[in-house]
Length: 199
Image 1 (cartoon, rainbow, N blue to C red):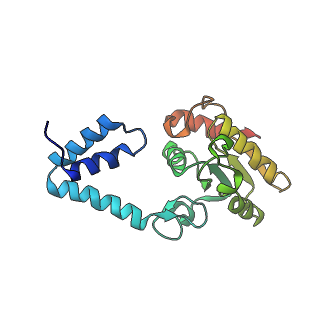
Image 2: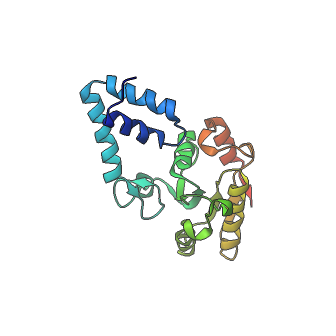
């Protein structure tokens, strides 16, 4: 049996390290890259390099940005009195695609998950508390995923902000418990935002 070249083995190994990609999928991706036109393959490599070199977290909300602040934080049309708290940038994107929310966001960059070794100190909770304490925010919408960890994180935030003069709401349960916001369709997300309740 012919041996694979070192470069091919390395690329397979790299693909296999990605979440949700097993060894067979990594091999298929590698062979696809090998069949791609050279310019397409190099454009893919350049796109990966550009993301790693240019993308950072917004200094205000921790969304993905290529400048100090993300597009949403710089948008003067957004309602600065509403602050929607999400776990990850992909949750923010899903809510934006629903097209019904026009406030600001705060991205936690995770959720409290003691079994995975993630505590409150690993999240952007201090920055969230500082934003709310600055004033101007009238409602904090807790849009963490409806999972045990997401609910626990929401409860922690509600307790943390409990002494501040803000309304704390939680997304309505149009999103099924145990599901993930990222995979919910626009209609479900729209209903969840509109039907949010006191937490």
